[in-house]
Length: 102
Image (cartoon, rainbow, N blue to C red; front, top):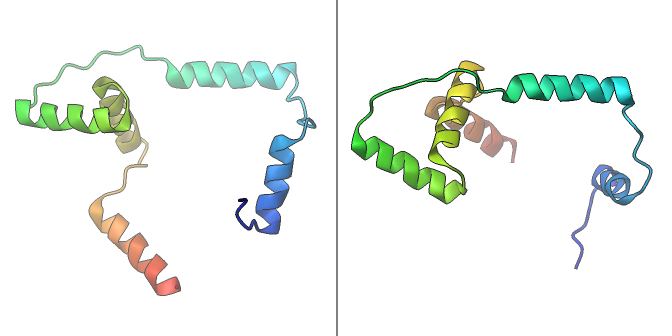
C-alpha cells in the first residue's frame, strides 16, 4: 500500500521514476568528478593512541552501522572539522524546538 504523499513528494517521486532526467553536460560532469575526487582523497595519515575500551566501543558502533571502524572515525573527524557534528546541547535544543512546534 502506498503512503499518502504531499504534492511536493508526489512531484519528486514522479521525477525520480520518469526517464526525463536532464543531462548535466560534460563540463559539469567533469567538474563534479574533480570535486568528488578532491573531497574523497585521503592523502594524509593520522596515528593516535586511545584506550582499548574506547576502541572497542568505536568498533561496536561501526559494526552496527555496517562500515569499517576507520571509516567511522574518519567521518567523525570530517564532521567535527567542518562543524557538522552536533553535541548533546544542540540536539536537545533541536528536539525542544520540534516538540514545541507540535
